[in-house]
Image (cartoon, rainbow, N blue to C red; front, side):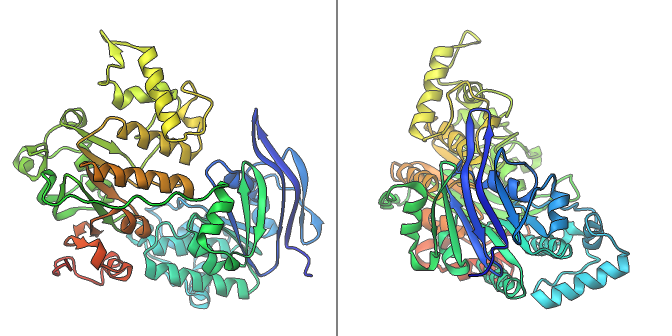
Length: 507
């Protein structure tokens, strides 16, 4: 048996009373692709921080190629041969590719430019070294991140949710690259919530639950249901059947909207048209950075239209283009933003106070003062109904894991019983069990007559939820495609611009 490249024994990490990692044992073999699976709060992120030198363990030992390993910083980890590509890219958009790489990799610009081109050819990561990052697609930006890691000559590459921003065609290309890297001598730690992808690409999978290792398996020998059961410790619930209504009232309508942002790096929107009816879910697909943020802000009211464009956005039959978010909410609109911290919640405030941000009309205020009993009851109901793992309503929002905060925000908005619900990235960073619960709740609400708009970069999620799917590419929406009659590959063609947005949709 080959000596492990990385070996952890009894690794533990505590944050006060929270035991994030407990006696973790992990062996990563040379030239392997090794998955780390687990629910939100299972300890995956903490473990990666320990391996990459962001944090140091309280107990336990680590070995690198059989020698003791102790890392005080990410720079030291990179020096030892450990690289990491984070889920959210860390590139400066106004710099070129080679200028971004120069921030980490020493060398003259001409020399680095040639190395970037050579690595691109060798590993299928072609990108123009002289292009500015803001002009790159999200797939090209991911290539830059991987190339930057490869130029530090890693023996272990950590990838955090690497496919969350890619259409199906580019996922397959990424997997081809990862196999070539593995065959070239690089081991890969692969973190993902997409179980079928793990079965397709990974040689081993270590499963975490409650900060402990609960399994170490070959994922190719188990189906996705088995892996999900190992992760969450129970069987997945049966999906709720979809019962969309036909001909429900129009609760959101956008008609031929053109919008040019003031920000020169934002995406202009052109001829945007969509309709969401009662008892229907419309899904918006697209690669990140194609106008989702701009469209979300216009629908939520964070961006208001000029008066000459006021007759472009309608909610519940009323023109709302010039109304602010509060006025739109009074009509029965609710919104879950993509950005959990900063837009969905205030991290320094308690969950109770975060409830007040949007739920205050539910008699949580009395004569302008907080009714703490009602606010606490509302917050506790949300925590209980949506299985938010927290010590209680007085916990700061910023103390929750990303997935648990997402469950709280989704729950808070659903509990408002809106007529129209807009959810951006509903299960971003949420584990498979919680994601299934959120999706089933959305389907149940649709079956009960709510109109729901979903923006998501998860194609599988959109096909599970949506009656119709439209694709946003370079600020232009495709026609509505009937989800039942549409294949993921067709959506993928729209996502990369291979299918003109003006073509007639399948129905």
